Length: 463
Ligand code: BGP
Image 1 (spheres, rainbow, N blue to C red):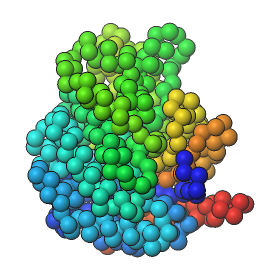
Image 2 (image 1 turned 120 degrees about the vertical axis):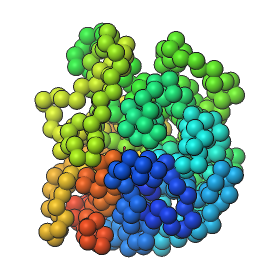
Image 3 (image 1 turned 60 degrees about the vertical axis):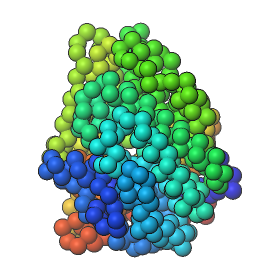
Image 4 (image 1 turned 180 degrees about the horizontal axis):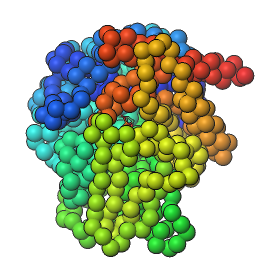
């Protein structure tokens, strides 16, 4: 941990979910542009119009006492084509965004990849093609070269678990496949790409630190039987270990590898790539925390992937049941949930932080935490007391984990302002600031924004 750095109290967004301007500034098409257009689904063509309003948005953050902004760079805005040509207009946009952060005293936390793969790489097989990993390395190097003089905190990938599992196993994110073997292959290529990015960062001698962002969910079982404990281990490998073990220690979980090797051809995992994983371990872990993973054993039936997030559905976005591994349980009657069926469970964050610290001994940033609610933004300030309670409880969980020894350097609310939620559209609002998507994208801070501002001020004056 950088002991000279203050604790970062910030908030987060991602390029596709907020920028809009999908065809402006020389940006190429992303896989999400193509997928949502082709399937006639609500898209992020305009999103929160951050591309045109970032100055106002960053100023609002700073006025709200926030000293850090986590955002992602759009690969298709920065790299024009498979040949790797740089789009200078895209560079100019991010230069200005980064400079604006510094102007307002806001530390930029930059995620290099938050899911918007250029369509020109998806056309070549996307994450199933090893070339995409090398293209990522080139793209990452361009980012370090152009922005590294002003960016000190980098993350290679946001949540490999979600985009790989949803894209290749569950099938509700592009490229919308339901293929366990391809899923394993894409997962490996992504972790390999991340390691190549870290290696390039180190080789370039850039200042600052580099990590990866993972959606951490501590795994619980429905009971204490041995069968359930085995299911929990599979679920932990599925939900956490293939990312955290690999990024933090350079080693894939051996029991997962053994199991996959029995099922699939893994000949693409070559000694040189394993070596790259070992050389590309991260400096810190970014953890996004939304909820835990509750499982029971599942030994006999077939693999089932239950998806239900058509954009209008509220409950139960997705559920995974894997033959021989585990069944995910979503309906614990003792738990309070959001309108979209996500459990509200702050203690999972405390437990998770202690667990991750015990396993990896790395500095941690909470890179996302928030609650998605369908809110009416047409009646003045949104009175989101539930969001304030959510933040208070989760911050208290972080403090308890710090007391138990977790090295936590920052907390980022998801999200800075209302934005596009993957497949759920703009109705699922997470922002500290309301965006009126129907009326000129005007911004109005919510009650939670004021609460966060006052809370941060209290923290900084030690009250
Ligand atoms: C995380 C992603 C974010 C964001 C958030 C909320 O997994 O990193 O991009 O979308 O989850 O998820 P959702 O919008 O699906 O409710």
